[in-house]
Image (cartoon, rainbow, N blue to C red):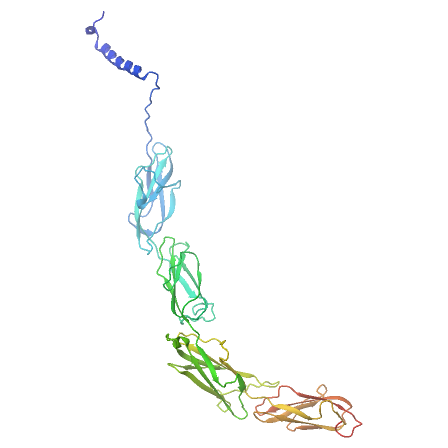
Length: 476
């Protein structure tokens, strides 16, 4: 038998190792042997290659460039994130956005007032085995924007509407009470490189409208008085400008009326050198209801000649006259406007009131409220044929007689012709014309008068009669 004392050191070591291994085998029995897995993949590295300088102030549109490298593989993409939304490195969170690109144009958020805002941008790469850079590269900078600009804002058909009939920039914008008001506007973002602009609007102290791309708005049911329409523009960063405003006045139309002459139209007698007086009165509803207002001016116009009258306080009444005795070219002179073919043109007198808001009166629809008076230079003369009567038969020798009348002057001459289809017109101061040896049959006689205002009768007075040579007396 071998003694332990004779065993060498190596044999003893072998025995000591064998005993634990045997015990281990007895304990594990038939279980599968466990394997120890070691991760030997190295994480990728990330670097910003082009970005704003640290704490640099730059436009909100920022173009970032980056690159990544992996010592034992290759980079398949990148994750980026902004500001304090970044969670602990390595945690899963929606704040990180994946991209396979190595650059991108970002639009940094700006405060609504357009103030500069500081941002931090993070970028980290991921390799082909899913390892993510544990230490992202980052840059901190200050983003700024130029506020959007309102370049157009006016009321359609108002004084600042270039296409409107009342275009007069700087003129007070007044709107007839009960009318609707339509506004139009436009704006742009000076540093947005064509980016769209949205708008919000309101009338007076009403709530602002939701932001949208509308550029027109129509307001209805507006009360009398001064009003402001506001529009703000907002750029893609969320910054908006100070509201632009459009001021207008909602007021009742001023009113004027011709009170003398009382008839709707009349006659100015030139031949007798008569004078026509026209009297008017005006009123402003705002002033009558205790609201600031009043009439500041009355315009009168005869045909195309306008004369303004200025008022500072009521009563808003006045009068004016026209006559042929006034020197030609003065405000009171009535010029001759007879028509060569007969009669004369009528004159038209108009009146407008202008209120304190510079609202000009429009033609009234109130019954009996007259702002227009039409009259004539003088009444044309008339003629009546006294012989022969219509359809009479006369002998070959006869005399046609007539008489003329001018209600506002005198008849000066007559124009007449027997059988106008065959003969020319004749002029005479007499009131008869004799004929001899006229052929039998039907004949036509024309005559008309001209008065001392050189106004011809409008139409010829016509008489049809017959000639019978067997008759010796002048008539049937």
